[in-house]
Length: 148
Image 1 (cartoon, rainbow, N blue to C red):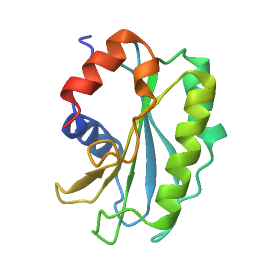
Image 2 (cartoon, rainbow, N blue to C red):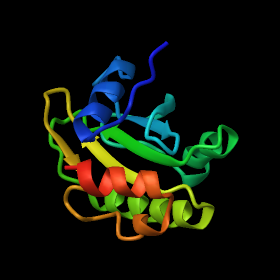
Image 3 (cartoon, rainbow, N blue to C red):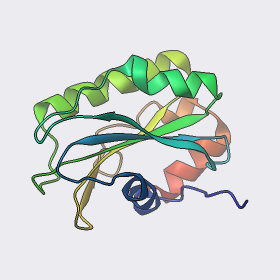
């Protein structure tokens, strides 16, 4: 089986959309990468309601630790169709980034998507990623250059 390399936010969105079946509820998807940005695992971490998803750093990083992931891309959908992050989205992203820094498993991006092809990347909008430079060279070089 050929591995899938996450080259940019668009690739991550395609992977997440292949997992989400019901866009009427918020879904949180974790994509766990190795040091060469190949997908080790992609899974739905949680399913919420029309306007909320319950997510905790413990749930996101549990799989990452178990499979020895080098980095994580987190995605969730907004059933209403908008992709702008809410205050809660910003708050959990900061918590996840801190947890990743502590565990040395960086949160490489948090992407909000809708059923159409619109999405919002925290990394592309420079809301996360300042600490990525201290992590693995391959991950750093790839994401610093390609994640746009």
